[in-house]
Amino acid sequence: MANYSKIATADLLQIFAKAAAEQGQALRSGDSRKANSSYRTMKKIYAELSSRGPHAQQELLSLYEHPDPYVRLNAATHSLDFDPPGALRVLQVIDKMEDGLLGFTAGMIIKEWNTKQLAKAGA
Image 1 (cartoon, one colour):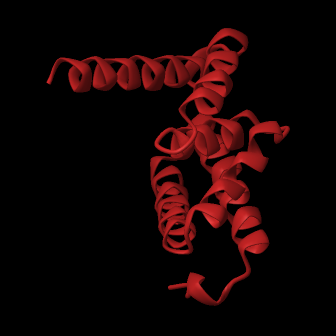
Image 2: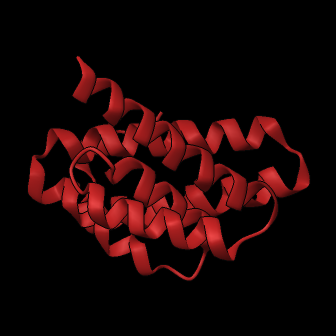
């Protein structure tokens, strides 16, 4: 198990991007074990970034322009809590531009986000 606390933030972002891209490849090939493993890696890295404070957490925003759409999707999804406008913009582009599972996933994340926001407003 990696000790992410000793890794520089820039290196964590590279590991996050690699895991997100690998998850995309695994999902396209139907390898759920690899996809889940990649997701767990991203989750641990995000937890580490969050523990370092808002500045480190916001470094994920740099991945909004990554060439791999799965990296953009995961960066945006993990950024919804602290950058809703930017994250939703990235997800909307993916929803409109990508077919298949990727576009569907982006659309569902947007839908879930909107549902949560309506629930909060009504509470």
